[in-house]
Amino acid sequence: MAERRTTVDDVEPHTEEVLTEEVCHESDLQEGQMMEVEVGQHKVLLVRSGGVYSAIGNSCTHYGAPLSKGALSGGRVRCPWHGACFNVKTGDIEEYPGLDCVTIENNKVYVSAKIKLRGVYVNCDAFLSLVVLRINNRAFILTGPAALVCAETLRQENYGGRIIMITKDDLPPYDRTKLSKARSKKEGILLRRMEFFHEYDIEVWMNKEVKFVNTDKKTVMLNDSSQHHYDQLLIATGSRARDLECPGADLENVTLLRVPEDARKIHHGSINCRAVIIGSSFIGMEVASYLADKAASVTVIGSSKFPYERILGPEVGMITMQILQEKKVKFYMKDCVTEIKGENGKVKEVILKSGVVLPADIVIAGIGVIPNSEFLFGSSVNLDSRNMVIVDKFMKTNVPDVFSAGDVTSFPLAAYENQRVSLGHWHLAQTQGRVAALNMLNKPAEMKSVPFYWTVLAGKSIRYAGYGEGYTQVILKGKVEELKFLAFYVKDDEVVAAASLNSDPAVSQFAERILGDVLVTCVCVCVCVCVCARARASGHSIISQYMFYSMAMSCG
Image (cartoon, rainbow, N blue to C red):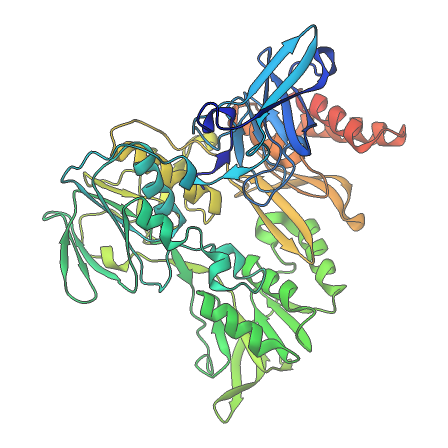
């Protein structure tokens, strides 16, 4: 999201008292290092990069991770938890502006901050002040986090035309990633409150669905048959849960996880009841984790040998299964549902292909997604064989003035030789929204991000960076049985992805190397594993081991 840290220039002169404190000696930080310091009672990240000291807030604006535990590279720091990146001189996510005050006197480093605002975050609300130049252009933006970032970026870049966001939901854009992880009230999942949209003159049309786009006439037709002209259009309609297709799928208490109402239904329908979950990837496993201490029993059915096996490999997949087995979750793997039987219209039991019969009070299916692109059928916008919207590195479609971003797109992955991919990643969608907005304004920007995502099971976070499709080997550092490991995914002798548990910030560091076009080979990883093992055997701390890891990785 378009968020940044408060900086010393955010307040009018003479309105706030400035606090200046000595935080360290100049020699305490070497080039390329960072450390957490305190100014008053607030934590600040002090960085030495390019021979210059700078200071920004130490907490990530996403979920508050300490950035001092992250990865520093190329003038920015990457969050160790979820991969958000911040400029070390401005404190901004992506390219947004600002500056903190750091001075050096007599080899001593001082950080200054306004007392009222030091250590505090502000959202877009505090820095989107701009002069709106009224023009007649109209931008239509269709739903989702990519759409929200696009709209915000347009306003940040002084776009003064009309912005209309269309969503078939009864809410403005919200954080769908929370639906499978926790029970949240509507207010708790909103990415922006309605006051934000009113303040920045962004119209949000809710409970509206686009039925067709006429790119020749530059119009969109809604479900009420009304037609509306656009000058530029962003398609960010995302994807939806794939329907369960088996006898009994229409019974009461057989549900998917699509919208907040589904999440509430799953929560209330599972309390002290028997929950059966079909699917053992992200949605299925996260729902199982959430219900483990609420339902009377939780059972997961998966088609592979282990959960997440296609993406994370069997070794890591086995550990994810064991994490939930410790919470009494049962697994039936390499199996599938043939029928769901009911009584009085409600689910009663689930029949597996193996012949196993599972008693059930509620069934939740998480068996993949399909793109929301049907409204483009018959239009001039090119779709691929899976009905994903095809875009270039500028998020442009084949039709002038039509852009697309988020889960609905097929785009070239720059860090992987522009392989065309479709990835349902939260941060990629947001980045694509920003890239699309800049190109709408004829400010050339390219999509260059490295995929970075995570999953949380029973309070344990597994992080993943890169693109490991088609990997042929997994190299493990650490001991998976102790729930502390780093996994490297190898394809053609090159490490293409990495995953970790309790090994921060290794995955963030790996992402920075991929983004910097640093080749990491299989041999390099083997050296890394050996060096770190020797460091551990010699009694080095975790931080020291990570320093050894970084040096070993540099052999790539």
